[in-house]
Each structure stands twice: as structure tokens, then as C-alpha cells.
Length: 286
Length: 170
Image (cartoon, rainbow over all chains, first blue to last red; front, side):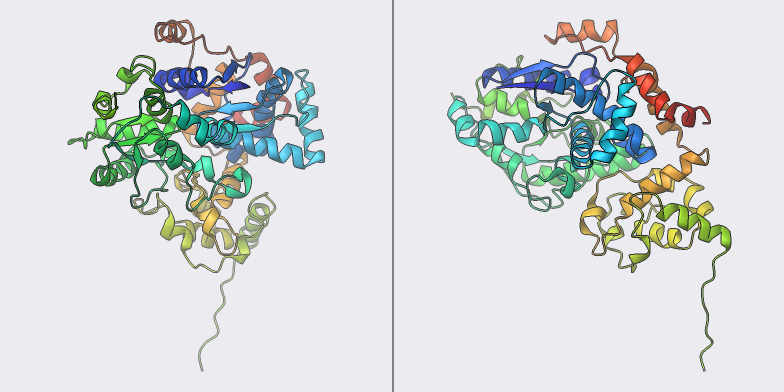
């Protein structure tokens, strides 16, 4: 299996543990992730709220790079996932709009053809590799580790664009946590947004929203697992900023899976987590 | 006999509402019956007095441009789409907020954080600088260099769509 790998600015610039663990897990599962030369920011979820046509064109230029590579796109940021999925679906479905955007792209010698798919790494794991195959590859399962999963909004919403899982009762991430031997637990307000996108507008709100969720998770679980750089940053930073930190490790999903696939803590960049996550190692069997 | 009162809005207010409803996403504004599902489920409204999705829909229906675009209101939506999913009328306040931002930008109004982000994308192709220093650090962690964005192409696109010109006014 080969995919074009759209890492996303935030992960490229500062969440190296997320990128590293994703790359190592992919290798371990026989998935080749190929970097996309010349790719830029997806445009951010913000750009579409300012100018729709520009957002489509910036996203489409990135999609064109994958089309030229002949590969479907794998994303690991929920923001990129939504932005690229939305543009891809809209341009595939609306020929008039596609022509309009292609006029813009002609300026840089590109053309959107609509030949590839965009999927989050988590979605690829479940759909293209499958829970059974992943379970078979887990050689060092966790035992007794309770996990509070946080999906992040744009993996699921808007549901008529993402067309993925049940937006009010999703199961994918929970299932993927359970195959590692850990237990994904239920907790109140599980699907509430981290509000990371307004971090730059009202930081205090984001930290308060974040802390509330972390404190809830702490009542039921040992760690929190995310699949998006913004959610990760919110739940980690809100604790670092707090006068009294709840001290709940936040772990990128591929770090959790990687350890269960017998990757070393270094291979999943565990020491880069700012809230000491090494305590999860004692839950590994064998 | 009870006195009949009706809410009248000015021509300017009606014009603003019309422009808003012509912006994709805000077409169903007048279907809002103020049930408040949006506000009840909004993670920001729970903590921020000035951000109330139901109120945004109401003010928009009355074309209250200054009250909508004056403060940080339209920039406080986190874009989580919870109201979008649960709106029984499919009015979708998140889309109305998005339409309001588009009108704001045309009026020369943009939040400084948004302006800075857009400038970064235009200048660097990324929202952060990922240069030699970052790539050396990445290498230390066992990562390949970040793809170098083709900033000429990104710039050409932003010019072609008129976005660069739109941002120059800010």
C-alpha cells in the first residue's frame, strides 16, 4: 500500500512525535507514505470562512500534487482532513466549479482531475488494513490501560461532507484503541470540541474547555488519546498552563499503536510528550 | 385591545440581510425559529457571554451589521459544526458565521490573528516557518526535511483569485 503523505504545517513544525510515530507505524504495517513535493498548507479551516474560491484553489493545488503522484492522500490533522476532503468532494461533484478552479490552477500549470481520495490515517487503518490485521500485528498488547479517546471535530463533522462513521456516536478510534489491548472508556461530553481553533482569539477559553475535558477523562481513564495536532496541543498545553495540572498524559494514537506493535519508546518519540507519558509502558505485556 | 407592534428594519439593514443571504451557506437564515439548540450545544457559548449562536441568527435576520461585525463575535466560532449537525431547520449558524466573515473581510474587517495566519500562508506557504533550523531539528528526531512549499505557485493562486488584493486592504 502506498499513499501520498500530507503531514500538515502544525505537525511538521512542532509535533514531531506525532509524525515520527505515524511513519514508524506505517512502516511496521507495510504501508509506504510518500512525501508530497511542493505541497503547502492546506489553507486552514479559517481560509474557507474568508473566501471560498481561494480555499478551494489552495486545497486543490495540494490535491493535484497527489494526483500527479497517482496516490490517495493520507492526512493526520483533522483540519487538513476536513479542508482537503471538502474541496475534493465539492470539485468532483460540481463540474462548473471545477472548471472555475481549474482556470485558477492553470496559472501554475495544474489541473484538478478528481482521481484521488483523501483519508485520515485512522480511517485508512480501519478501512484499508482492517482491525483483524492490526490485531494480528499487535505483539506486545497493553493490559489494564484505560484510555479516554478524543476524536476531534473534523474527523466526523460536517457529517454530510466527511461521510464517515456516526457523527453522534463514532466507534472507529475506540475500536483502534481496543485492538492495542488498552480499553477505550466512555466519558461525558466525549465529542465536545477542544476549541483549539480559537486559541489565537481567546486563549483563556481554549484552556478552560481543555481542562474541563482532561479533568473529566481523569475520573475514568489513565491517559487521553488524540488523532489531531490541534486537539493534542490544547489538551497538553491547558495542563501545562494550569496552576494545578491534572497531569494526564496526552498520547498521539500512533504512539499507542506503535508501542503495541513492539516499537520502542524512542521510535514513537515518547520522550517528546510534555506530560510524561512513559508511565504507560508499565501497562505493556511481555 | 392589544396594540399591534411590528419590528421594522431600515433599508440599510434589509440590504445587509440580503447580501448575507446571497452568500453561500446563509441562504436558510429566515428559517430560524430561535429554538436555541445551537447555543445549548455550543462549546464557546457555554463560556463566553458575547458568543451566542441563536442571538447571531436573530441579529442577522434583522440585518444588525454593526452589532454583528463590531466586536470579536464572528471570530469566536471554533468551527466545530455541532450546531450545523443539530439544527432542526438546517439554518446552520456556523455557516452564517462563515458568511458574515466573508462580508466582514469585504468591509475591511478581519481579526488580527486571521490576518497574521493568512500572511504566513502567502509568504511562507505554511502557517509556521519551517526552515533550515527546523529541518535540522527534524533530522535529529529521525524525520526527513519538510516538503518545501512552492511559494511562487501559492502566491500566483492568491493573486489570481483576488485574495492577495483583498488582504492588502487590511
